[in-house]
Length: 193
Image 1 (cartoon, one colour):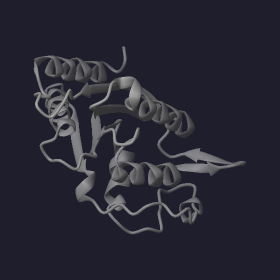
Image 2 (cartoon, helix red, strand yellow):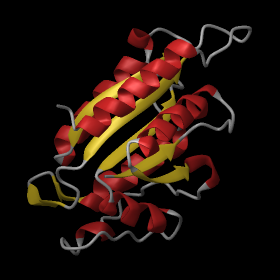
Image 3 (cartoon, rainbow, N blue to C red):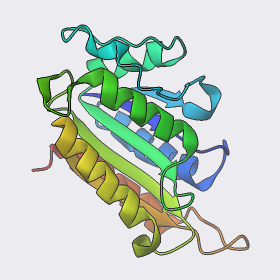
């Protein structure tokens, strides 16, 4: 089992990365091969809708030359795409949004009435999301957006692990979150059974 993990937190030791660290450690215990990307340390240019990627429906291409050249093959080679992000303004952080935009065009050979293949059809997607607000005030919108993204791209949406930080004076990572991280990794390893 191969996972591509995309971390979209600007803080190396922040809540999202701490929760993701726990999940990844448990996944590795289960035998997962994990490739990780810190999206804030990558150069990911925004999609400009040039449609260059749509000229060859058999290959993943993009006119923009940046670190997506490493991300595209990692996505093509994995079984599970794990997106880890804090919620800012009801959605993921900017580098993850830029990556998702680039992936949806380069991997899906259809737009409007044109219908070609999905070059990543059947891959699974799961989320690790953190926020200060309750689940129904931001994380839910991101999750719904990803559900639609998966339907459009013919991907299999698995689930979201969500962790709430109650404030700057409270500790985020606790035993309850570690247990939730282990259970999440167990479910991902079981293949949704």
